[in-house]
Length: 393
Image (tube, rainbow, N blue to C red; front, side, top):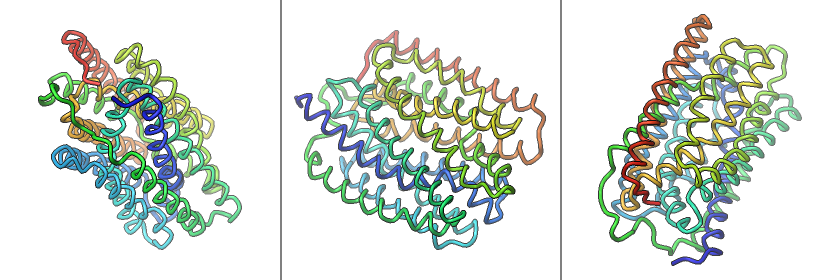
């Protein structure tokens, strides 16, 4: 049995690695829609690239999670995934949206390689302190980097008068720091045993798949951040105020962190009941975004940040409570596949609705329909879990 102090040290070390990773790739995500727009991409193309990148980044987790469980080489996948973040600084050398799209997708695949293994390691070492708390702390630290990244990018854009070259080049140093912190973390906790728990063998249950489908419907109806930022870019770029776009993303990331931490603690007490809150809130951002207007887009970003904070903490914690430890890498791979497929569809759908200037009633109908279905399935999965009452955390 691992003592509590060592558990918290492990959680914090994994949090530092994620923090540095987020400085690089979350810093870039705030400016990527504007950069693609600068390179000539339409709203549909931005939505497609973002959705496809996220879908591949999520669906590949099914393979990487299965391989990690099979080989127990969790740290190999963690290292490979973080190394591929190099694709983001390399955006400095692109001059077409096609080349930029390839690098964006490569970075997403890197995230797919590392995330199931990292979450398996995190859920394994967190037993005894609460999986919701562990994921909340991890996401809080993760989002510190997600706030610093857009802030750095926004300031560089302002100081250099919107120089994309300087922005992406400036992300090389934090990438090097990321690799150093990753090596230190591995040397500190890499020898621990993960994914082994005698007496808890078996596959994934029906309630897991019902929960994963509920999450997919939730993300299908929630407009992705890149579309919100694209709408902001169309307003700000003609005024030569693109530097505000990553600042809007900073708002999202700034809310994500404290919400993740608070909801993680609440989850350990209320479990799946907490997820009703982000599911219901997900109806609002699409409506505000389609109406447009700078202030409404900022409000949409605020609500999206609250939802994202819960998605990144308690959605993941729920997987650990439903899936046995011996197949948890595969469980996270499947979960992220459903999650990413939902965002792929939402990116394409909302991008197309914006391009064709769809009526508000169409957007409201789609957002409401998807979330009602999602909540119905969430309640069903909650009742199923309550009936068997056998969490595996």
